[in-house]
Each structure stands twice: as structure tokens, then as C-alpha cells.
Length: 437
Image (cartoon, rainbow, N blue to C red; front, side, top):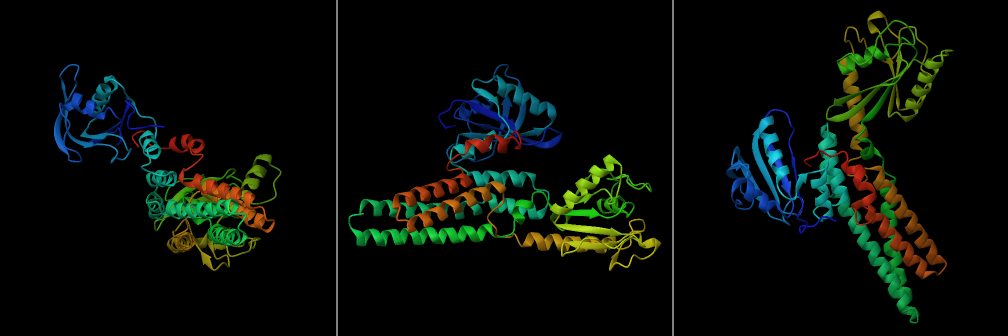
């Protein structure tokens, strides 16, 4: 575990390496004070931006004029001594500062996500907050930003921590009942109180698990599959909605052989638009594979748009998640309630508005749901199973087993916030972080 007594100092640019007005280089570790003394002569007052001339301590050469901010630990992002060098954003400036830092004793470039990893290991963040930070960095739409910010602020962790504390309290009551088993009246009351707590937490978790999985899907987007027979206009419509040539358009039936995906932002909600191979009987083995993939995507879709050209066959699909869309409206009508022409643009704006409403309605149902990752869901399912065993175990009079199942339930909950079993998810999580984060 990283501690503030570790002499090793890490550094990295926290901004992009391209040309910019300002760049930020972050430094963290117990030796940060010595780094600042080497670069700018003295350490500025804590948490106040101070103008300093950075120089190479080996040669005395000036590197840049920068604003230096000093954050003594543990009241810093990482929980260690930290500093930020806000310098000019030229590539040469950044490169010279990083080169000098690399030559200082006990200094090394940070790994991806290492600043945040140290914040986690030093107790400045919980694992669910780290995941929220990762999602916030990757957020491309308003809905994704809002959900990530709620996670970063610890909305999930607060609820989970309260459940965990209550379960630990119930476990303590069970252990007390074991200690006072010779006093049956006391033991029975204590057991009843513990089971009442366990039942309440069990019901709350079951209620959370029964809610829609929209927050977990928000990172991927609302999945819309364009389906229909060959030459129904799927690829043309995809290009019109994406406002670029994302798919090959040809009058030759069977041109689309593979799935093509385009990400859209509709009113702040992420939408994944999927173009698929036309559905028909075919002896072409490649086209057959494309059709198989189409059918798989239809099964996973939040919404299937069946494209029906003039004179086309009726939609073979049914249900509230299927929208029949007439295409090639410039050539005639298909009998569908909503028709578009990707060539002239007729009906495109109306279709986009409809898709935005669909996405908004779907994701709005997920507002306030605590589960934002599949990992959270798996941990809650394990917790629920442990609580069910505990409640069933009481019927058999096995108080010791009830206490053990409650301990396992608390452990399962602890995986969400990183209380236990954290190492097995850290490497995978931080691999997607920026170097300076």
C-alpha cells in the first residue's frame, strides 16, 4: 500500500501533450517538497498559486515561468504531499520539465491512473468513487456526466456503507446471542432484533436489484437496431442520422455483411445506432453470418426500427420495442404511420425527435438507481444470497451459521466500495485512466 512515508515521487502531465496555452504537471509523494525546492528554490504557501521560475538544478538553466501550487498531505487528492506546476503549454516546455523531473532522486513517471490509485489506497476515495471518476472522464453526453458525478460524489457508496454497517450490527447481535445462550429470554430477543435488521436490508437490496438496468447501460448507450429486408434503406438512413458516410450504400442487395455502429448524442443521451445485414434467405455463407449477427443484435436491442420500403413485406416483429418505419418516402408510401426519405430529408427530424424521447424515457427511469456497474450488481446478488441463507438458517436454529452468513453478506457489500478484495479489480480499472490522473 502507498503511504505518505514512501520516498518515491511520481509525476506526469495532467493535460494533453498538444500545443496549448497552459499545461499542468502533477507531482505526488513524500519527496514532493524536495522536488519543489530543487525546481524553484523554495516551497510556496500551501494551496496558493505562486508565480515561480522553474530551473534545471543541474545546470541552473531557466525552464519556464509557472504557477506553482503546493498541497501538503494528507489534505490532498492523493493523501500525500502533492504539487501542481501550471506552466506554458508548448511541447518543448513540457518535455524539458518532465526531463528534469526524471533526473531528480526518487522521481519516476506515473503509471496510468496512479494518482487516483494512491488516493484510493490512502483512503481519500472509495472504489465506487474511483469508478465514477473514470466514467466522468469518459462521459460524452449530459446523461453520462450526471450519472458519473453522482457516483463520484459517493451516492452509491453511502447507501452501501449504511447497509454494511447495519448488517455488521445484526451480526454483532447474533454473536451476543451466542454468548448469552444460557439466558434464553435475552437470547431470543437479541436474535429477533438481528433478524429484523437483516430482513429489512434484504428487502431493500432486492428492491434495488429489481429496478431497470439503465444506469449500467448508460455507458454503452440506448441501442437502436436498424433491421429490415435487403435494400430497405438501412445504410442510407444510418448515414443520414449520423450526418456522415458511415456505411457503404449500394443498390446491390446484401451489400451490408457486418454490423456497423454509430454513436449519437440525442438531447444529452447516448444512443448506439446499429446498421445490420438485410434479413432474407441466402445461400451465401458470409451473408448468412451477417444475418445471424443481425438476429443477435435484434435480441439485445432496446429498440428495433424495422425499415419498410414502398411495397415491402410487413414487419415480422411485434412488441413495444419495435418501430415500423416507412423508407424511401420520395418514391411512394409504405403504409407505415411514420415515413422518411433519407435522400430528401423528409421525416428525419421527426424521427430524431422520436428517438430522443425514447432514449430519454428509458434512461430517466434509471435516475436515482444505485447500481451503475455490473460489478455492483454481482456484489449485491451475492449479498442477497447470503442474507437469504442467514434468514433460512434461523429457522433451523443455527445461530452460529446465521452470524457467519451475515459476515459474508457484509464482505460482499464491502467489495463495492473497496473495503475488501480490491486488488483484483484495480489493474483493470486503472488501465483505462489517463496517465496524469
